[in-house]
Structure formats: C-alpha cells, structure tokens
Length: 154
Length: 103
Image (cartoon, rainbow over the protein chains, first blue to last red):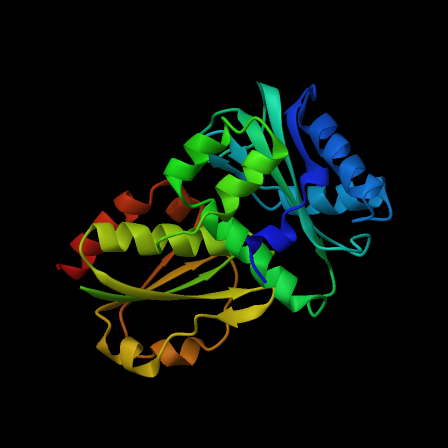
C-alpha cells in the first residue's frame, strides 16, 4: 500500500470558491458525501468542529488540516481543496488559508488500520515547507496527488 | 546531543505526525542525533528503543495529552512542548533545548 491508495482525485478540488471557513468545510464534506466517504454532511461537519474547538488547525503557509473523527465516516480519506481566494482560519502563523486538507477518519480506532497509517504519512509530508510551497501551484487533482506521493527523504 | 522524542496530539490523526517530522528535521539540521515515536489514533509507531532512551541527553515530549509508557523516562531530563509551538517554530525550539542542555 502506498500514499496513492489513500489519495482520491474525486475528492480533490482545485479552485474552490468558498466564502468562509464554514462554507469551505461544508463544500468539502459534500464532496466526501457524494463519493460515499461519509453518510451525513452535518453530522460529520459538527465532529470536525469538535476538533477545531481544541486548537488551531491552520499549520502556517496557507495550509489547514481540519479533521473529524466521526461515526459518520464510512471510508478513510482526505478531501483536498485549494481556494481561489484565501479565507480566514485559526492559524499558527496568523495568516489566511488557501489549501485545505480535510481528514475523514472513523471514530472506531481499529477501523482500517493500514489506511490510517497511510493518512499519517500524508500528514507527515505536510511538515515539508518546500512541498507546501509547491502545493499552492497544483493545477489539477492528479498533480496534487503526484506532489503528495513523491518519495520523501526523511 | 542525542535526543529521543515522543509526539502525540489530541486526535492523533495529523498534528502528531507533522510534529514528529518537524522535530526530526530541525534536530538533524542543528546537528543532533534523534529518534522519535508517535502515539496516535493507531497506537505507537516508530517506538523508541531502550538503548536510545538510555543514551539520550534529553527526552523531548511534543505532546498535547498524557502519553503511555512515561515510566521509560524516569531519571531522564525531559522537556515538554505542545505540538503547535513545535510546528510553528521547530528550529527555535531546538535552539532553546540546546541552551537548557548545554550541548
């Protein structure tokens, strides 16, 4: 199994036009719903907000990694969206956000452990400042997947 | 210096793994030896070896929650930081650790 197995171009949107954070989370949850990753948009989004309440998910450089551990999650995956215009978000560097990774994870910790491991590897990739700089320039979902799954040297 | 670390955040899905990578990169960039385990939603990964813990000059806990197996670090110098602070400025954090440990 490799990173490409957990990255799905169907749930990647380049050039989203959400008006704010709430709109972005709903649009991305809708993508997850349409491709059967979750069975309820509102239920999932409210679980994402539970995590948001615990601390900033904006990790700097315009990247945010909201995540929900939810009983409404039926498949593990990561919805990814790049915004046309940066939006307000709680971030570690105080900046706005234009690239969002919405992690969709089951509240059952034993569910699909191998997939969980792959999601953690995608998260680890987001520690690479150089990569973060390149993600903003991805112009297609396929390109986003290529950038994220390129082998890391650490 | 020799460092062992543990990273763990509340959800154990994303920040844990970003914190580990940032810690590894920053410590190596500053010329230190480091290994780091994660305690996440899927349990412990990259578990620290007893020998590495014995040899370590310092234990860095990048954690937002209580972790398992704390007894391994009894008698060791432990520095705690939350994952956000570490992710925000990993090099700055390592420099602080250098001052405290004096290496």
